[in-house]
Length: 420
Ligand code: SAJ
Image 1: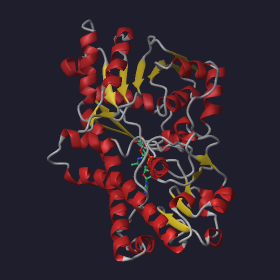
Image 2: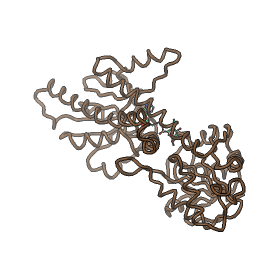
Image 3: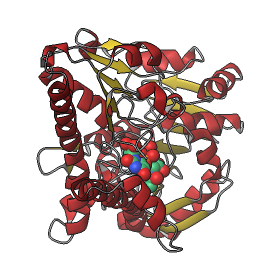
Image 4: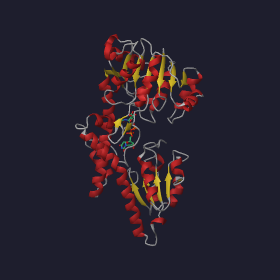
């Protein structure tokens, strides 16, 4: 059996590598020639612990090969991005559409096509339609049910960045076939490497299940973020409050922060909202609460600068050095994409007339857009220079700092690392 994985990004490449590590022949397909060349050299173009070793071995042993042009295979896994577009945050299915159009010509009777990309409800049916339009010589589940030539399923990924290789194997998997036979075919495929349970359902439920998981997390983080704003008004430590409330056996509040980042939790709830705007009231409000948190933090930083100036009347804003601790979207990773910490730092750079420093122990260089406006410093150098410290990510080295090292600085701690 040969498997083709279309889209070799954060999900597609680890999935390809894990199949290949089980001695399954994998053809990886991506539109990005540089990514394809990198993989064929046995290297990787994304950051994920241990992935480099697995890819190197898979390529060396001949189980994994990448190309920009799809080739025939027995199963196709589509793992392309599904961003949103416009003010209404409507899902953009154009990557799925292109993937379907390039895969269609190489399909043959008996093949299985799986959509792994996080998708709005109905996307799998839509993908099946795009495939059917391109191949009138084959039959598809939406018209031919169990008798169709091609089997189609939605099997959303649910792995945590930073833990992808472990979670791919260990997590339970939701398998949503367009028919029961489609589910069975997909389940047999995933069983090659999934040690968790492969639970079958229909495609629409599988789509909604993935969106629900990430919306659940978003709503819960929004609750924590709203509490932090309420507690600030009422002069209560939100960190202590949550610790205390969580001693109740049925309460488990998440942690407030500077906002919600990453490529999933801040996006997926919109796929529910855009389909059912009248009904998805809480889910929409949670998005708004989390999206407005960076602005609230920015105001806290302005206030800290004002307080510093009140206590140091010989100085002006130009003399105040602000150090931003952490740029990544969550702790102990180097991923800066969709990061509220990065967004806040950029806004501070734009409004503050004095020096702004950044500390990000997980990267060696700043992105080009920031490099001219901001200096990357070590923890020690930033502590020595800073008048105002803004803690944005609870990276391990920051958690290990002693309170005495922060003395005489104004601190805005968005993660409760130092101000407990
Ligand atoms: N965050 C908080 N407070 C918390 C927890 C998280 O502010 O208590 C913030 C983080 O700092 C980060 C954001 O939320 O900015 C998202 O981080 P995360 O660790 O919650 O999730 P992701 O985006 O890395 O991965 C999520 C996971 N989904 C769930 O846990 C339900 C993962 O399992 C999914 O596979 C992934 O989204 C995805 O690809 O959809």
